[in-house]
Length: 236
Length: 235
Image (cartoon, rainbow over all chains, first blue to last red):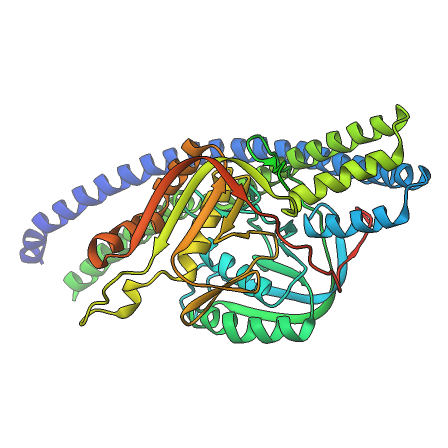
């Protein structure tokens, strides 16, 4: 028995020292973590309260927008304007994206969230541009990506490494399927072109894609076009 | 057997300690490596703020218009003015202004051993460059005289590219009205532009950029809308 004790003395001491060292590190880490946790929690509360305020503002702005638009509609009708001008105005408003529109079309859902059993390549702005191009080729009359209307001057770009901006607005969705593309146009053509030209490549990248025929609403383009340098050509 | 018992005790104590440390460290790691909710809150915060800005701008625009009505301006005149604005936004009015011209062309001589795809201008390059130009604040863009509208497609059909339903062949001339410094700087920032530069050196394609004082960009044609109906906002 003494033989064993003597033989064990050195390793046990070493192990004890190592353990002691580790314990002290662990305690220190734990302290740091609790501090970090606290700071995080504070930040969270701050961010949440800002978010609540901003969302309240958002609701109010939307409400005001709705009221103003209906008043405008009224004012336009009252003046006894030539109805053909109003028709042209509506058509031009669909083309330039400043009118909210409704019509038959398709709804495309794209899910590039990570999945346990396979690798998924995240959807890039280039992917979205290609999809939009194909939908335009299929004769679409209006396209909205996560409720952002695509107009001629819409750019789809990265901000940083993963946030995608459409019309300079981030379209990131925190919950649910990350991308919803609403399209108005000939349903058969849209389904045909999208399925044959886009869906396969996306599926190969591990992305889940679905397309359904549906009557969809697409919001108006909320940004503004500014022409500082481009002037109407006086010669035409 | 007593030594064995003793060792058992030692082993148990050591195991308990190691287990304890393991758990503590795991917990710490879990908390540090996982800043959970904050990441989810921030994007939606930014998004909502951006949307608010858009909405506020839109509201101002409508208020100004309403003010004109209440000041007694003729509704017809206003409607005509709006129609003009809308046609301008939609790209249905020819415009002139300063900007840049980008010329892209296939290589004169195709290589024998390389991929022939490297020697030609693909529709994707044009599409990507146009996207970049819009993000750089371009006000009007045309490719080979075809105005780029909200419905314009760039579709590769073998030797030509379909743009606005017309067949276009190389060389491709992209003209954009806008601040030429901004437009040049966004181009130089773009991966596609660099890539085309490399293809120019390696395979002899053409990638040319000029600053032009006065560009003429033609109008697009109004397309018949068959499916979309205007609806009231908020409906």
